[in-house]
Amino acid sequence: MTSKAVLSCIDLNKAYKVGPESVSVIQDLQLQLNEGDWISIVGASGSGKTTLLNMLGGLDDPSTGSVLWGEQDIFKLNRKQLDALRNQYLGFVYQFHHLLAEFTALENVAMPLLIGRTKQADALAAAKNILDKVGLSHRYDHKPAELSGGERQRVALARALVGKPKLVLLDEPTGNLDEHTAQDVQSLIAELNRDLGTAFVVVTHDLTFAAKASQQYVLMNGQLQAQ
Image (cartoon, rainbow, N blue to C red; front, top):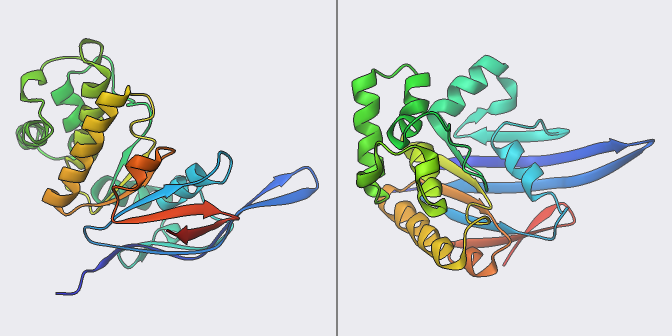
């Protein structure tokens, strides 16, 4: 069976005005990501990796070009439509976990489903299921301050995955972790990609982590170069 594209970039460009000058960051970029793919993107600081990731997630508008989730050009949607689609289609994991301090791990993970108006009982059941998958069944009722750095990042991964998104974007997901914990989280990402069939895009400075992806790219001169 042919895999379906979950993410496509067509002639994607991003430029910023710096005084009278226009500085191009992304130039005529092309990308297709299919179901279950896992790609990594590395590049020098300032090369535009986070800018690209934000456009892939609909958080930043391109200057020109298109980003498609499935067959939907996301920048043809209004903000309300895009937010609703993002809630169903996309997960995002940042370098810092961005968990809500006043809520437990279980409540943090259930939050995207509750925002999407899933019944509370169903949302909590789904949150328990994904927390079990990331090895945190013993941490349901712990708040972020009561968790280690690695555990907080596992909760953030669970939150990104709880809605069974087609696509998860990860921006330096292990950048704040010590080496041993980072390796544990990296192995977990590989396991979840394999077991759940979710497509992953990982931006990282860690070349060893990048090499674990099924396809590696370097962002250079505004374009993705396959390695």
